[in-house]
Amino acid sequence: MGTGREASVSLDGVRDKNMMQLKKLNTVLFPVRYNDKYYADAISSGEFTKLAYYSDICVGAIACRLETKGGTMRVYIMTLGVLAPYRGIGIGSKLLNHVLDMCTKQNVSEIYLHVQTNNEDAIKFYKKFGLLIRQENASEVFKGMSKKMFGKLQEYIYAVHKLDYLEGRLAKTEARAEEAESKYQKLDQSIKELQDTREKLSWVVKHLRDSDLQLEHAFAAVDVKKSKICYTLLFLIWRM
Image 1 (cartoon, rainbow, N blue to C red):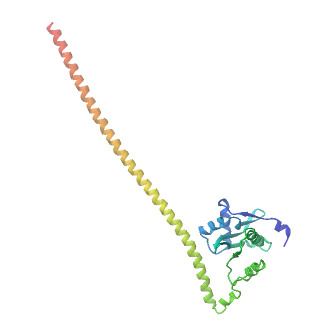
Image 2: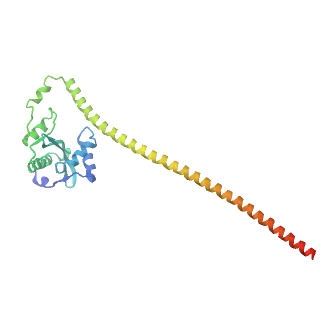
Image 3: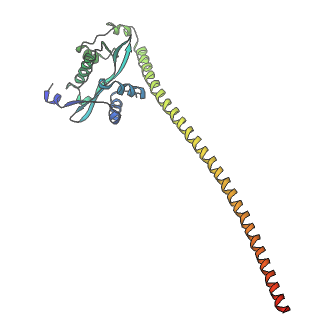
């Protein structure tokens, strides 16, 4: 397509600060929500996961996971997608070419992905880059399958993705529950410390009250002595 439009495309790595860009893209492009492990794998892959920008607008992404098989590294393309208005101008090709170049530079011998067998456009796209279908007659697997059964299979696949998402949510909920339990324990400890402080203050107040009583007795004794002294002086004066 037009080289001017292709020249406007740039790639950027995925980091914590721009992770939301990838999440927003996935929400628009794919019917499932990916859990935290997906995004952790994407960040861990480094240069193998990229965001595509067209005139500074994030319009596509490729997310990969690095794996080890038999002591050698291989790359799994988890997702590759471009927003509909920006397809057909080479953005998907640029993203995939970048990953293939990285495989060459790092001597990665295997790269693979999964594509639905009825997604002929995607299969043609990947074949252009030399990717081969391991099971060349993969469509034969579904040839004798009724539409109803195929629909059930798709529902099953969606359910698996949904379960994966729910497991991620459950892990988050458990983490929050543990955090809440920890806060409750700290609050309980603070209440106990306050109760101890209150008891100490009560003891101090009681001690001060006892001291006040002792002082009152002392002052009373002094007053008695004063009255006796006055009485003695008066007596002496009268005797004189």
